[in-house]
Image (cartoon, rainbow, N blue to C red; front, side, top):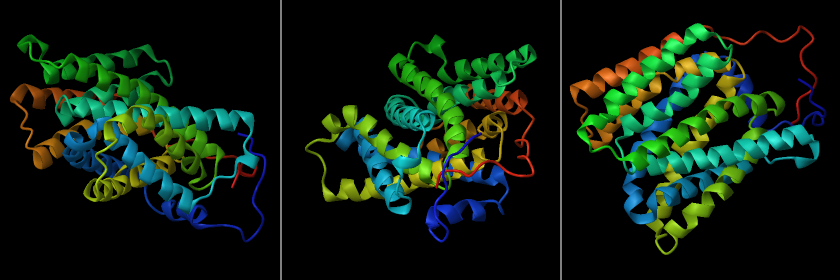
Length: 310
């Protein structure tokens, strides 16, 4: 890992203090807290869909999140290499697309089902990061779980919703890999101060047409509050967790997310699963846990890495 420049002494801000504080907290708790925040935000966001649409809701949340990250950590483009700039741009676009796709999915299918399908992304990261053929059993187990969740034999499956969730799965896997790369290269929350504004601009393409003409004060206030739950809090926690965990270990922890999504859907949206769907969620969780039992990233060299961009 090769960073180039460091800021002058005494120029450290809020974003630079966050990692130091997070180092005292177990990395897995950061990931679990992020998941709880994501699922709560997802469930509560559905109440805005009838007014500004799922893409409009995603755009508003990302836009307010961008303002928060820009206020906390002003991005410094001058210190970015071409490789860093490419990673930041790719992560921002992926974040925007995933947010819109997932919001559009949960507008059509139950939250727990959408999360289980989307989880195939981080599961794929956990399985394929070391290319061990023996791990292929876990995607098979997860696929059985997803089939039990969607129950296509009933003929009532929303194919568009499933495809949107599947697209979000691919994007989420990409997001995990790119978030770790950006988190390793940029200090504090600098990476998010770049990527979330890019994500907001990406989401604006489908989101602005849906939201145009429906932006009352109540909607704007609700979106601003939801932005704290997603993206501000969870993406900050995920970035910090991925500095200390392998992508495989992070993907394994994400195995809890389908169960949390099912719980959030039940508690906040009254989406009651049947017995087969509970079995399906259980299989997805088991697949995630079994996919990768490894964990923490190798310690850095004693001398540490070259200075990170700040």
